Length: 110
Image 1: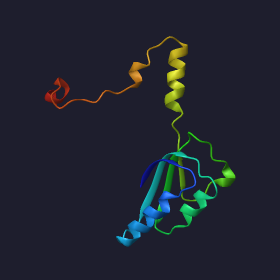
Image 2 (image 1 turned 180 degrees about the horizontal axis):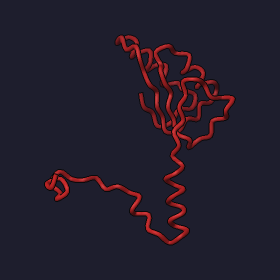
Image 3 (image 1 turned 90 degrees about the vertical axis):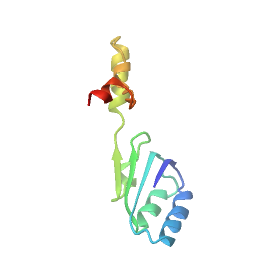
Image 4 (image 1 turned 90 degrees about the horizontal axis):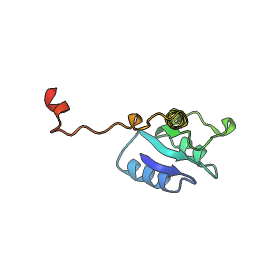
C-alpha cells in the first residue's frame, strides 16, 4: 500500500479493512512523507496484517515515536549532492537519469 503522505492515517485503516475482506494477510505500508500525527504510527503498527511501515526522512520522526515495524529511508544524499554541485558550479543534470526508449540506439545495441 503506497501513499504520498500519511498524517492522521484515516485512509489506511479503511484500505486495510477492505484488503482483509479479500483475505489479504500481509501488507507493507509505504509513504513518501510520514507525518504520523495523533498516534497514527502506533495505530498502523497495531494492525496484525501490517508487516512493515516504510517512509522517507523528509519529515523527522523522533526516536521516541518510532515503532518496531518502521523503516526510514534517507533521501538526503540526492539533494545534498545537488546542493554541493550548484555551490561548486558543477552540472546537476548528471544526477537525473533519462529513461531509455525501446527504439533508442542503447536498446538496439543490447
